[in-house]
Length: 568
Ligand SMILES: CC(=O)SCCNC(=O)CCNC(=O)[C@H](O)C(C)(C)COP(=O)(O)OP(=O)(O)OC[C@H]1O[C@@H](n2cnc3c(N)ncnc32)[C@H](O)[C@@H]1OP(=O)(O)O
Ligand SMILES: CC(C)C(=O)C(=O)O
Image 1 (cartoon, protein in one colour):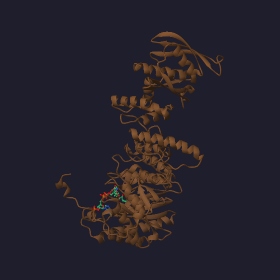
Image 2 (cartoon, rainbow, N blue to C red; image 1 turned 90 degrees about the vertical axis):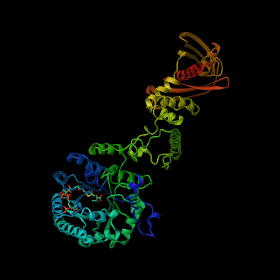
Image 3 (cartoon, protein in one colour; image 1 turned 180 degrees about the vertical axis):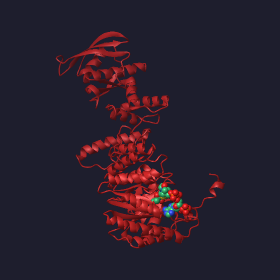
Image 4 (cartoon, rainbow, N blue to C red; image 1 turned 135 degrees about the vertical axis):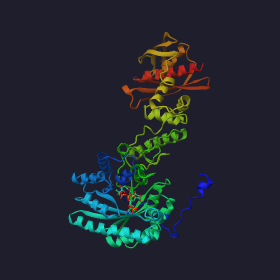
């Protein structure tokens, strides 16, 4: 902003609370959760959900484990009204789920709301009116503090009357009151208006009222929000008859932090939406707060173990998209492109496998660098964890070849393969897919068969002494067929002797490994051969074949060809 623009803004006043307790507290248990996807989330959508979409979202929320769901603002429109009627009349609300409905403190709207609730087993009637100086001055036309309190009291009186009638017919009604714009309302005034509502509703510890203290607009840093909540909870009369609820928005990008600090400051309940959908920058993202708690070892009662499905239904029904960097749900949040991260993650997973083997069934505490949780715990797969572009390193490429294609390359082969493949990504100027990485591995390092290739081989174990083997092989060299023969203490060694006998050995074989290809087709084997030339050049080649012996020979020939390509 330009200085002249900045000058029109003011600092947000701090709360005087020198003995604040919340900074020394931790979140030790989950709050009561209330989803407001179908109300605050829905009211903010360019294209609000249809009834069919709302029903699908409702079922999703129930499946995730929400026990309180704000289903709409039934007095606002026929769609909203009819949606609630369908939930009730089609008996779609599980016994342990309470539906919540929002209504302004206006008589005709409150009456219509109770009509919509007729027959509901358990409902929260959520009454609100705005209380901040800004709203009093602008929205309510310079209304006095008393007149705003009067709106709340009149609304509560009517809710109390109609709730008694509904309860007489068998419904259980809980009252919720929100001093909307609490976050910029004078604290003592917010307290006064809430206590006026309580005087009418007469909550008890057995029949608590919910006081929802919304950061309707996020004006301050999250510590100020926490101070407001702690101050309110400490001053409030009959605290044991009240559930203090948080409802943060995200205007400054700290809605999650504000809720977490608000819980430390003593709140009991949290309202929010999946992936933070909602007015402007959105409501609190409940997925993030809940999974943050899980990641500290706390159970929350919400189950996001299949987050991809939650995201799919959310994106389809709301027509919103989850950004790639959105915590937990975003496409790229469990992905590392950069070399040093890939290296650490690969080592972390390898170590974890070892630790789990050693722990023999005991739980091994999570500890993989750069990953706050195990992606599998929320239904994300490992596949996308490491992706390869020009920022990637050898560890990441080895990880893809291992986890995606089952090739466990020897550690000292990683630099040779890594360099070639990330240079390829650099040349192409884009990310390489796991299949492209496998194809590049085969093009440059596995089964390379020019100028030499093995056409056939035969092993005779009945010759020589102490288990020696004779290898007779047909090779082609520069298109010419040649028969070669050698004796050695194993197939590879015999083939090396055969090459030597044919005058084709300008190398020492310095390492050889093999393994079955994990998940490979036709139960392939992979072999890796390291050759050294003139004590200087070291080169690895790989061979893949259904026969482990042929895989070894192909690896050797491959390494020979790679040496030849270097002119050595
Ligand atoms: C922060 C939040 O998200 S709050 C929820 C916001 N959600 C919505 O607004 C979506 C649903 N609402 C609606 O569809 C409509 O507002 C309706 C149908 C409920 C009401 O519509 P209308 O009465 O035609 O219009 P509108 O809401 O603009 O009413 C404004 C009047 O209500 C008053 N008012 C607004 N909120 C409240 C309230 N909570 N309690 C009492 N009066 C209120 C305003 O001061 C204004 O009064 P005025 O006409 O004397 O100036
Ligand atoms: C009605 C209230 C709770 C609201 O949605 C808000 O203040 O954001």
